[in-house]
Amino acid sequence: MRQERSTGIVKGSRDVRSACLFVFTLLDQGWLIQEALARAYADYLLNVRDRHLLSELVFGIVRQELRLQWITASFLPKPERLPVPFLHILNIAVYSLIFLERIPPHAVYSSAQAAISRLFGTKLARLAIAILHRIDAEKSTFLDPAAYVNREDPQTLRQDLALARYYSLPYWLLHYWQDVYGVTASLHLARRSASKPLSGLVINPQIEGSVALRHRISSLPDVRCIGAWGFSLHESSLGLVTGSDISEWHAQGRISWQSPGSLSVVEHLGLCHWQRPVWDMCAGFGGKSALLAQCGVPIALCSDISRKRIQALLPEFQRRGLSLPPACLADATNPPLARFDGHILLDAPCSGLGILHRRPDLRRKRKTKRSLRLFPQTQKALLDRSLAYLAPGCELAYITCTLNPCENDLLIRQVLDEHPNLDLLCLWQTPHDDEQIDGMFGALLRRRIV
Image (cartoon, rainbow, N blue to C red; front, side, top):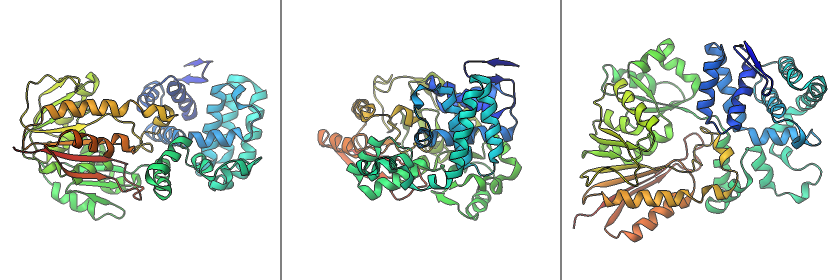
């Protein structure tokens, strides 16, 4: 066992909160949330239950980070002068007090005091405990958006700024959504971004017993069917679905995890009914291509700019018992083909504003509106290049997981203006008042046969 004084990490221990602090140290260095968790799983001797708690803590805290920072700053005279690890430990404790009722307050105090004493001494530890006692005494008030108005000068701040704090959103983003979608829609989107996402499950229809399994899952309470083989459900329902065999079922390729938003956009665009060969230009880890292949759609090529994603794609097809598609490492703006006669799937890189609940670490990257400015340029370049390969009578599906008209419908309208030989077959976006499904956008275009 070794201790790293700079972060308070005690590697080799089974301390979930020490592991949580380690994850936030990696996030501060620019790590992705899943990569940071994977590193913590490798470095700490946590059992399955503790790993689940660590994941819940990290995702929950990052999802509520701006809100937690405002709460703690309300009780600290000059938080910017305090060490960053101290503030992380405080956020972990405050989140546990307000959102994790099953953890007793005395356990929260004890863990925070031990970590801060080890790192910074007893003086800051006493300060932390005093603050935590005050927050614990008032924690019910922090469940009300009205608590997030500036207490000293409430008349100078707009109500929407308090709502941005309550939903842990950058103020510019809530204000932007109000401008482009309206006040009511922006509140739905804010609530969605702060909620715990539903799990998405898809059954492999090519596996024996798939029809019976579909009936079994669809009969469960609080399960939403998405298409013929997909479902969205709460994490608590997973045990009812598979019992103790969930890992085994996944390993056998009987089920796969796929976000409800991804399942929904594929369903609404009708991509599972495609019959011509498909080129997935930004294939990623191959989730959508594998979903189409399970439905009998021929996959002609998967390409992606990331070697890591391409290397993970083929094992995913193997796990599901699917024929391996040709796959290559390639930039979609400079693909390795001279021509292509088939449909094109363009799941474009985007700002991810529709999946802030699922990828809460994106909040750290979207601190200003300027962070969005390059995405439409990249997406337009990808669309222009993909359309150069689109043969007459063939279709192109453009998909994003963001809520930004400049990356979605406005971009599609621009493309249609520039290409009069294109028809718009379908334009779909997750309804704003559906607070359970990821915010997805999809457009289906077809080149006319002249």
